[in-house]
Length: 309
Ligand SMILES: CC/C=C\CCC/C=C/C(=O)SCCNC(=O)CCNC(=O)[C@H](O)C(C)(C)COP(=O)(O)OP(=O)(O)OC[C@H]1O[C@@H](n2cnc3c(N)ncnc32)[C@H](O)[C@@H]1OP(=O)(O)O
Image (cartoon, rainbow, N blue to C red; front, side, top):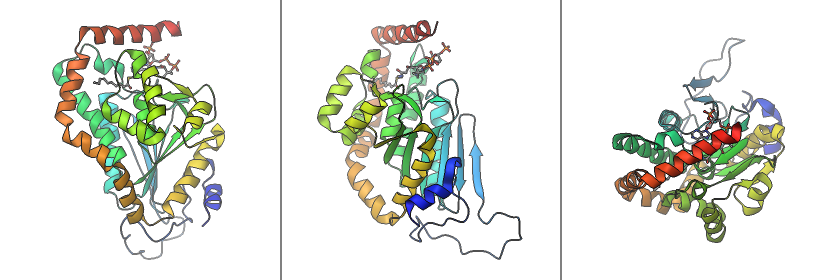
């Protein structure tokens, strides 16, 4: 089925209708069709699981899951959020019926505000260790996912929020110039870890990444498109429809060829963190424990509050 037709059928709900079946080269063989269903019962269930902070709906007939961040006020990546995120990804990854996931936000104007700064302020070494391991875990699962991952960026997405989008296979952003995206860590007086940087370089190239990282730039949507930080801009109301169309296009290929290609492109960067995980945690702890860094983070949080009042 042509991607455009599929997208039209998906409509605004973002959920593939039961009549649409994607090509036969699934992630793994599906169970044989059962006996005819009584009228009124759905042919293929739309499985959903919702935790406190993330809602996931999987349409088993299309193999596409919709993951929505729903942690007000700004979808900050707290320890609890990151844990739910990793568990949700793991559940989908292990579900043979799931071939792709669209990641978006259920909140208006914000995709994700990045790592929860309060998790990095005034906490114990044990807490920093647990938190940073959760950040690593989320990235390893998302960047290394076998599923097709599409980010439907429907709001601002600084720092860790940008990392989530960068870790997907394709990024579509709402074309609102008020929404911005980027690795702005330098603006907070902190440094994006090497694997944030590597992920960024793999998307936009070395020169753009170097300039953007040093300046801690947050790029308004049109600029993000020009830099290649996002792949497409679409009017906000068309975002989910477009994400579904892109997903259908990517799922029209055999999974094994796409997955092996993805692994080939990403393995070196993933392996680098896997090989240096404990060192990276130690590095985070020693960095974040510095009084000067704590001061910078506190001042940044105060600035956010002042800006509001
Ligand atoms: C060796 C390596 C060491 C360290 C590496 C660390 C890497 C770090 C990565 C990160 O992701 S750091 C986080 C970076 N994030 C940001 O800079 C975003 C900051 N937030 C904003 O710019 C804005 O809040 C916004 C996301 C654009 C939303 O703006 P809006 O006006 O809609 O909301 P408001 O600013 O009023 O915020 C509401 C509420 O939420 C609190 N908030 C916002 N962001 C965060 C956050 N990232 N963590 C924790 N809390 C956050 C904000 O303070 C407000 O709280 P209040 O209602 O109590 O005042």
